[in-house]
Image (cartoon, rainbow, N blue to C red; front, side, top):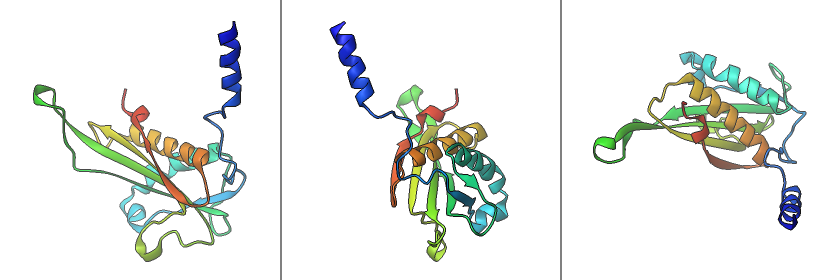
Length: 167
């Protein structure tokens, strides 16, 4: 009984893991800003819907045009792959990443042609297939959730995305 009371006291004293950062602009508006290569390649069709959905779940509201409070950005990619493991157990795997950023609208998010969000979260995943859309959607959702939990005025955080690995 004494252990249960102590455990309950400890659990209630710790902050909930799923709480948003007090600095996160929950009720603010956002736009999604793609790079010209994301837009022209058509890759935005894979990035925008899950990013929009993930940001709406944070409490922010989408505003399609000038006048939004923040610009949300996204970058994704993967390496060329490498062998993991030894001998017969070795597998060719890729390190895939998604970076989601949030920047106040009065700040240039793409100085000198490179995305430079004010605050961003990168989620990394080791996977046998760098093109799975289900993993991409999960990484986008995870990066956006982590961005809202860890948000501060400036900075960058990297998170392990192993929870997004195909099942």
